[in-house]
Image (cartoon, rainbow, N blue to C red):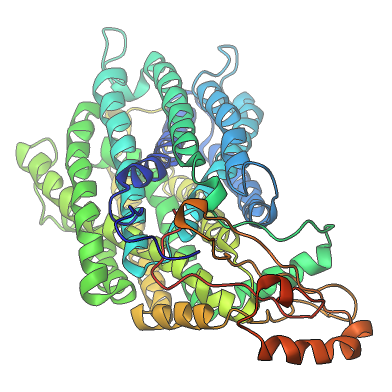
Amino acid sequence: MTKPEEGEKTASTTDQLTKVTYGSGSIAYTVKDYGFGFILIFYGAVLGVPPALTSLAIFIALMVDAVSDPIIGYWSDSLRSRWGRRHPFMYASALPVSIGVFLLFNPPADLRGADLFPYLLFLAILIRVSITLYEIPSLSLVAELTDDYDQRTSFVSYRVLFGAVGAFAVSIFTLTQLLVATDDEPNGYFNLEGYSQYGALAAIVIFAAIMVSALGTHKHIPKLRQPPANRSFDFKRALSELLESFSNPSFIAIFLASLMFGMASGIASNLNHHINNFFWQLSPRQVGAISVAAFFSAGIAFKFAPYVTEKIGKKRGAIIIGTIAFFASPLAIALSLIGWFPATGTDALFYTLVVFVLVDFSLIFTAQILMTSMIADIVEDSETKTGRRSEGLFFAAQTFAKKSVSGLGALSAGLMLSAVSFPAGRRPESVDPEIIRNLATLYVPCMLTVYALGILLLSFYKIDREKHEANLQRLSASPDITPVPAFDAKTTAAAPALKPVGAATADQTHTSLLESSHNPAVDSATSAQESQIQNDQGSSESEQNVAAPSVQQERPAKGTDYL
């Protein structure tokens, strides 16, 4: 990939449409996540499924989904099709996830209580695996669209902005227009028809978001990275490549940190409606109104995250901002428990919570943007050592971490409800206040402990701006870099590197792969040819195309955008 010609538009400067369509796809995932936050209260409190069974269904579905993450990531890194590596998965996910979400909130009328467990389990697995087919390939595109340290943060900012805005818009509409009190049902959280309408709305929004993002980025397929040459699947080789890529120190740090943050997210999301409805005693309309503050916080983070990246870097920014955000998250509950917060049912409580949400969510979204951008920078750091680009694998591993322990978080939430003997199918006014207080008392220390461990692990991430620039420079200056074999070269061919090849003009950008092989039977016969290649690096590609165990490909100049 060559630099754009003078005056030519690039994605990082003027192609805002690419950022918008890339970012808008995150609406599908966040709306799905928002809907799953209702499962404990909808299936537990409304439909009468025991909390332990509801949590078990969520946990099993998350475990199945987590296992699918690295499989889909590895597959999307290697897929060859006329629609590239990522887009076939994105298109394939749209219908199943949308249908699944609709059915989740429209269960058969003759099923109630524990009888709903198989139904819930099947749909939870279907939805989670289907959305993974979209999210991992879609998220991985950021590392292909640009390798610029700052522009990656910009792309991710759009993704987080749209995800948050989409989810909050659906949230506000759901809580203020659908889950509303009626003559027959004074508590909106128990409005069955409202949940049914939410399922239809969410299904439409998710389908539209996936298709807009896939179609909006489809035009860039010819300019994106191409996969290795077709090769038969070898489990041993695939496992070796996975382990080699995952041995990157910065990846290990952010992976382990994601485990902690994922667990905290699982606990918080599954107890969110219990805290709002039972602890704060807020109505759905009040919660929807408070969500407006979170809506604006996404816009603040959209501007703040790129600024932080430019001024102090991603790692330092994520640690500082994350520490403030994560410790502030359960602070309101802690203050209320010791009597230093406005009383429930007062206007002072409502407005104080608005301020808390605005500040805390702004910081959380900023930290989320920075951490996602940090994962993209691992791609080149790993490539200098393995010769392979593994965007799908790295982003899949992050989602694997979040989902696997988010499932544990969901299970923990259910166990916490069971530990305090929280009754199923009960309204706030009929639950013993001591039980609600015990739930909050368990919640606060659990969240603080998990968040603290996450911040500590994140401090071991090693890639800053200077190291990223050095990685790009090294790859650009070493077109003949030989990938480190991911497995025994005596038994099988080494994994080919995946790097872009320069095009003759910016309008005819394309990528290509010169497959490497490493067969000891031909080593002695090709050693002389290797020496000649090194002496004639300026020669044409046809002169370099010899049977030798090195991959010779032109690297783009650092900071290049692949659009």
